[in-house]
Length: 232
Image 1 (cartoon, rainbow, N blue to C red):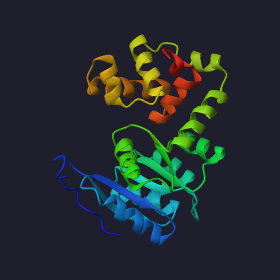
Image 2 (image 1 turned 90 degrees about the horizontal axis):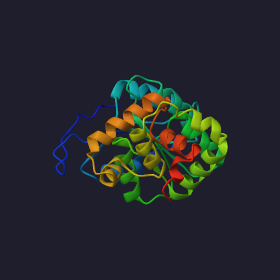
Image 3 (image 1 turned 120 degrees about the horizontal axis):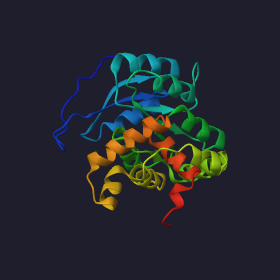
Image 4 (image 1 turned 45 degrees about the vertical axis):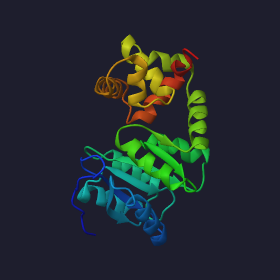
């Protein structure tokens, strides 16, 4: 597979989002490529037909985002996500699936996926999801998002989740609560009357302090501690 050079987006003037497409069906990969490259700020740098090849392609092509099917031969998307997220400076992973089974949703979150979309997602929502996970936000189909929150609320006793937040400053807890409500960095900045870079710094600090792989796991930490219900 040939590597595509990083090019500037006419819309933003900045570099395009480099995407790796992973699916065991060639027609599906072709369809995803067509949708993704219809936008001027996204380019597909490579394709892979299974999870094992995806891991190796991430190493060689260094994409910003991996758009990957869950069910594939040799190595499925969930196992591949775990391996990809364990790499140095890993890309965000956006999983696609026909099924929204609880077991798959929980496994995707635990593996470090930043998004989980059903394959019947509208093409504009797919493009928006790629942009979202690239900037550090989460992207879930609405039915899947409800499952994530429900599973998170039942996964741990509230006392354990609250204890995990000991030592986290009040300002960071406020940001964490808003992450748990599904707000983007831009929306949090607007809500708190601060700048988006300031929010990003707090999110990065929270990720490090709580040992979370990404924003999705941060949101789950907030839900488990019932932070996301504060102020409702």
